[in-house]
Image (cartoon, rainbow, N blue to C red; front, side):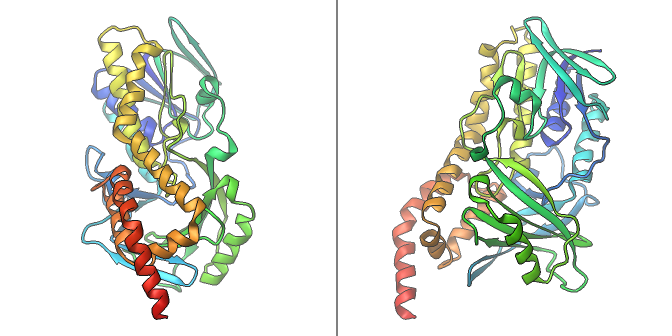
Length: 384
């Protein structure tokens, strides 16, 4: 079967790419190894910034919670911030992803689910993807097949351990705790570069812990201890990895574009990936349409506009986020001490989730604030 664009993976990046390709008049097929809807281990947080990138509001039947209250903890310190507008929508990924895919199919994309790609051939005349049951040929291949992307391994190689964060997540009954359905909780530490979360959903809580792989030894024992202290009874604990964004990586090759986690697009501080999956999927489709519809050679040179577009739209922000993350890696107690001395740093951080500012704006705001926050922290210590 012949298509203009073959898309590997039916997550937010692949579904968005397929939708935009179809809307541009390209024939597109999504090849997905699972049967949809499928369970996806994930906290399910869709930031307001990510939601604003979508072509329409997320349907109410998919939204599990709308959050405008944020509570953070670091050791004995805590802080509580309320916002006038939602900064996050909590969803179940099986329903959310399936909604995105159905929108792509409704626009004209073809879905081939339950087919795992076994081989990819990329040549001067096109691309060929073989599954256990079919052979697909196309002009361009978009790799949106996640952090363990087979396509990324062909053009770049696998992620290194130091380029990944590991997450543990489970679902907990909330009948005994009555959590605020508009509030998320974040507990920083106790391991370096880790945090635990409690996200509300309609009938249960999504609870997890994530951290940089190089810093995450003993995470499972710490997570179990966290659940026990909170009085939460876990179900199955699942693990998954997330790429650390803000690192320069190959995302383009002849006839190939990488999007979403496959490209390494995720927030190195929070682990947010859906926003960058949607953004990169859209930019990949825009690039595909520009080269295919204009009859250009589908080579590295003409596809590099995708890399530039990603850098301009969010790549520089992820690089700034990594700079902030590195500061917290080197000076955690010092910086968290300053953060928890005032609501302002958290209020500013929530503006990032709302899409009001980017990490570059935050970074330029943050550095001049350090002396003032240090003075507040010192004054508080002296008063004690």
